[in-house]
Structures are given as C-alpha cells and as structure tokens.
Length: 409
Image 1 (cartoon, rainbow, N blue to C red):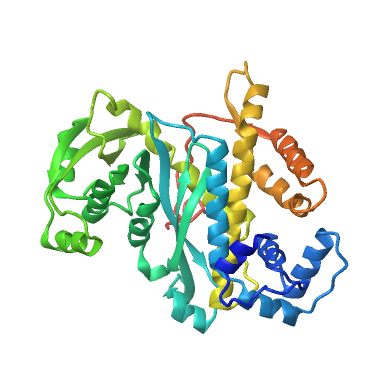
Image 2 (cartoon, rainbow, N blue to C red):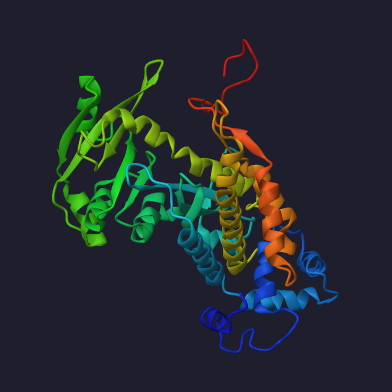
C-alpha cells in the first residue's frame, strides 16, 4: 500500500495521491479496511487515533479522497494476499486436488435510484423494490481462505459470474458447485480449461438424470448431447460444444432424501462413489464464510449511496475476510499440535478470529513492532478452538411456516 509503483498502477489519474498529504493512498486503504462506520468524519478520526496520530482532516477532504481511490486496488491487494499465503503455505489437498467451492450471495444496497439503475432491484413480500448486488466467490474450502470474487448487478446471474471466474482456476483444482450453477456451457468451459468439477443437480435436471433417479442405481456414466440453445451458449464462451461425458452419483442423505452429483472424475477405481458425500459436504465452508461476511463484517451496512462507494466497501470487506481467514489458516498448525491426542479434531474458531483481527487491526499496521503485533495476534487466535463434529446437520426451515402450534400456515 506504500509502494509507489503499485499506487501509480492503481490510480485513476497520475496526479492522484502523488503528494505527501494527510490522506495518503495507504491511509485511505486502511480507512476502507477498518470496517463499517456511521460517518466519514467518525471513520477517519477513528483511523488516525488508532494509528496514534493527532492529525485532523475534514469530511469534505475524506469525501474527495474516496472519489480518487480505485476499488480495483482493493481487488489487487486481495489477490496479493492470497498469492503470498500460497507462497509460504501449500494448500491442503483432496486426492491431489485443491478443493474450490463456488457460491454466490445477494447483497442488499441502500434505497437509492442511482444504485437501482446500476445494480437492478429485487422485490420482497412487501412489494418493495430494493437495489441488490450479486457476489460470486471462490473459496479454498480445506483452508477456508477466499480466493477471488466477482461483484455485479443482480440480474447478471450466478452462472455468468462463475463462468467469468473460471479463468482463475488451475488444472489441479476441483470446483464444487451447488444446484443453481450447472449448465452444459459451464461444464464445457471446464472441459476446455481442463479443470475438474463436482456439481449437485436438481432431480429433474435432464431426462437422463430423471431416469437415473428412477433406476435406483448408485452411479452411471452418461453422454449429454447439447440442444441448439446450449450450442449457442458454448459459442458465446468460445468453447467446444461436443457431447459431454458425465458421471452421475447418487448420495443417500437418509430419511428418504437423496442428492445427485455430476462430476468429470470418471475413474471409478481412483475416485469411488463413497468419497463424494463427504467431498460435497466440504462446500459448506463457503456458506459459513458468507455468514461471516454479512453478519460479523456487516457488509450490508453502508455509509455511502454512490456506485463507487458500494464497490469500495464490499471489496474492502472481502479483503478483510481474506486476511482474517489467512490468519486462522496460519495459526491452525499450532492449534492442531496443542490438541493432539484428543478424541476429536479441533479447528480455529473463525468468528473469534475475525473479532480479534478487528480488535488488533490498527496495531498490525503500526510502523513499530508490526511483526510482534502479528505474532501476538496469532497467539491470541490459537486460544479459541472448536470441536469438529462430523455428520451434524441443521435443516433449513422455511420462513413461511407459521410457528404457532395448531394453526394452519
């Protein structure tokens, strides 16, 4: 954040942040990373007090500096954080693959006509049309470190953003998708990129899937021939539209419930069917990440009504989420050593990690003893661990069910 080359590459105008003033590029980046604030003045005062400086600037100056700060710099910083983490710690593997969960979430934006025009709107039970943004992200589920994300208007759709993010995956990645993502074009794009995948399908996804469900078989291999519309989608992505070979696997969830997975891993000996239930369950980590993103980082609490401000605040929260996840991942090996010999496995409590990261935020960027502050933070993080309880389930409850007993919903 202090590198002149990085600053020049991530400024809208060559003269932006070129002079040594109170609101430098680094301080503005820290301003966005410091979390949700009710006002500009309070936020900047909190920043300078946290850094141990007596500087006082006006909210008008902060507003002008915000307009000069590119949100793309926050995207780049997040990528640098992930790359640095992987340079010092190799990712955990499943059968030789790095597991990458792909999922999306919708983010409620302030009620504003400009944001409604930019991002689109979505209605609710009260028929209110609210501006909404769509975020799709990749997460390394075995370390729970977010890898990348894409923010767009809500009408773009999760599948479109997943197709855009596909270029960031590697040939040693295994992408895991929920039911809203699968399509012929997406699977064809995976084949073109030589990236393996495992995706949950709806029970009536295609005629072949419906027949497989009715057969009661544990697994089968099918040839999926595209329709004219599917070939058109492949042409838009510039990928081959030849028929796909897919392996379908039935997962028994108990109590008569099943799920159907489609995968490009066709070798039944190397990847037997019984491995895929626990494999797909690993995707739950990205759901937990979104819970932290919305609940604990308060991503839907905005202090701005501008398009640029929305991008700045959302990407800043995503960078904070990434840094906290990296802190937990780097602390985990020591935590594992401390719990060796116990009957169950333990992992770092991520909610506690996020709260501790936010509590020590300003000391991490202090010029004095920053390395000591980081080590102290890791030692504090290690103290909070939670037991891993395999097989736990928490069925989703419909919000429309009347909670009063004996009353018809």
